[in-house]
Length: 138
Image 1 (cartoon, rainbow, N blue to C red):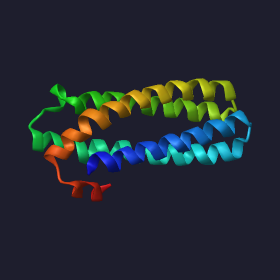
Image 2 (cartoon, rainbow, N blue to C red; image 1 turned 90 degrees about the vertical axis):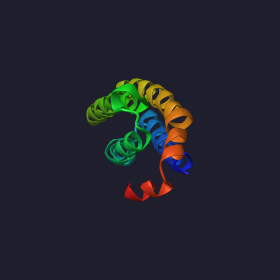
Image 3 (tube, one colour; image 1 turned 60 degrees about the vertical axis):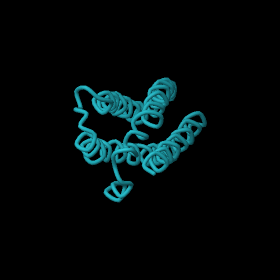
Image 4 (cartoon, rainbow, N blue to C red; image 1 turned 30 degrees about the vertical axis):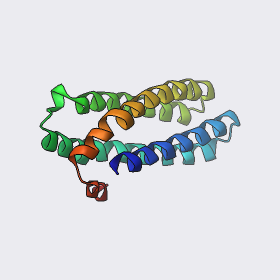
């Protein structure tokens, strides 16, 4: 199922970010950078898959246009997520632990709300309209 597979990616990314935050708390900057790079890579790849593969396929199969459906909302939220990731990366480069953690809290709230919408609204709709083989394109 699309829902289960993509929810698992959400959970994995959340766990990586929690590790990142713990490393920042401990001022273990080199490890924090490596962990954040992993989080950024996996999260951005997931967002790109959704925007380039999943959402267009869903819009075509369901007949729900982006402007009037859930994918338009998700793409707007993806931009916010990308902006927070960029800001955290800048704070990390400057070793600003408080800023990293404050931005991280905001990012996790944003991602948590976003993921709930995807996992409870959009992904079940995708499962209704799409074959799980679409996940092979990620």
